[in-house]
Length: 283
Image (cartoon, rainbow, N blue to C red; front, side):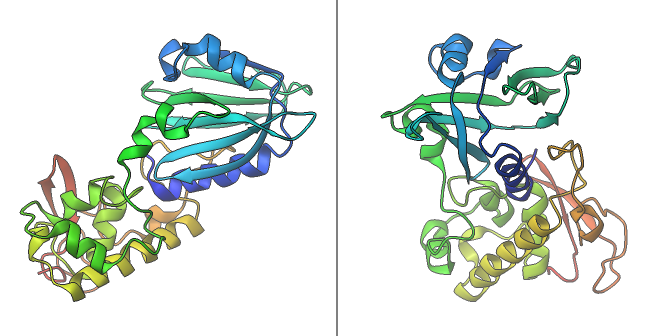
């Protein structure tokens, strides 16, 4: 599943490609791709004729401001969650859609933004102007602070994790604790912090929590800088995945020597997810 760096890479691509993009026509090829009230009919009607404005990211959600093409006034929002395999494709000229195409958007020049999703778990929402975004995209209400925000710090983690017996790996996967992190970057940030993923979250001291905050932000910044990861089905608008995979220290390196000490990287199951770590550096 795309994590924060991959979603941020998509956001930047959409913001660049869709400057002044007026949605002449929208088509939904699979009804379940739309999760907002009214289904695909209301969704297409709400987006048709609108200009796509600024894109923002909240956790793993993407939200575009829609604007009236004549006045430039806000006219609602368009929300997207890529889930496991959702991806956007940009097509300069008309082409036949593949079997996994779930939604299509055209401008007056017949340029097309296409949403392709092999597993069909991705979702979209139309939020009418004047309606609270999180009342339609309800998952937004459950998100914790962004890793880059001032709210995400050691004091916050210490308060939220006090007395917790779940592993710190499981805690970092909890979107209500911190928004956007996932399996890859949880493994990588815990390695950078020198903390074993099995450690009960409530046993970590303030210094260790500070190190986790610093490491998570650092790892995410590096991955954003290289366009996300090579792991998973993620692709940007041009069909290219990122380069972070070549820089991973532990993720999917089971049995290979640790880049720091040479110990074989181990893999265990935590919170139902494969977890990669160095038994020496993270002891």
